[in-house]
Length: 238
Image 1 (tube, rainbow, N blue to C red):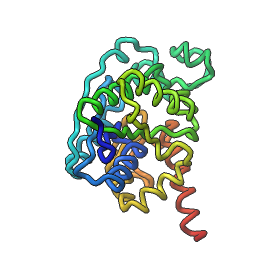
Image 2: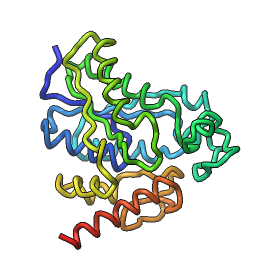
Image 3: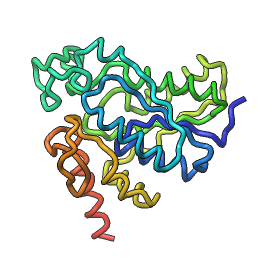
């Protein structure tokens, strides 16, 4: 039987997933929350180490799963060093993303596989709630971050796991990055988000900006910086 008061968070170590971890702790209590993190050969592996640090700090049990398939498949900027994360035009090497009009950072099947593994973890640990940081408003526009994916995946997971009690939560689904910063502030974890998380696609962690660590030029950094500016403007306006 799945327990409605327990949750497992897909924890990457970035701004969104860490905010979702704080949300889950606030909703269910730290003693009822688990985290699952993935090592898929990502070029920004520092994000994974950030996840480990935060889970230790918050005393959240964490499982790190190795998923080498994406590195083997290649052809996506986040799993293949030869593809530029800043290039979204023709000839990036991510042929599928290019044909679909998506950024070179899109990793086909990533969230599908990750959430499937998180669902498997959930049912084996009697956990009824899966929390993910996917965000529909992200400028990247990944198809596996859209509402229809979350809604459909929940139904598929229930059928595949044989349990209608399994529920997918996406607290940030309709929020802007600025609103996500606001949620972090409300949850009391804003400083953790800025200083301890990592989102930069290039894995740069030698420059701490007002919004956090990063190169400042990749899509993830630009979106995060813009979101922080939006957040600060809201604070001033209020």
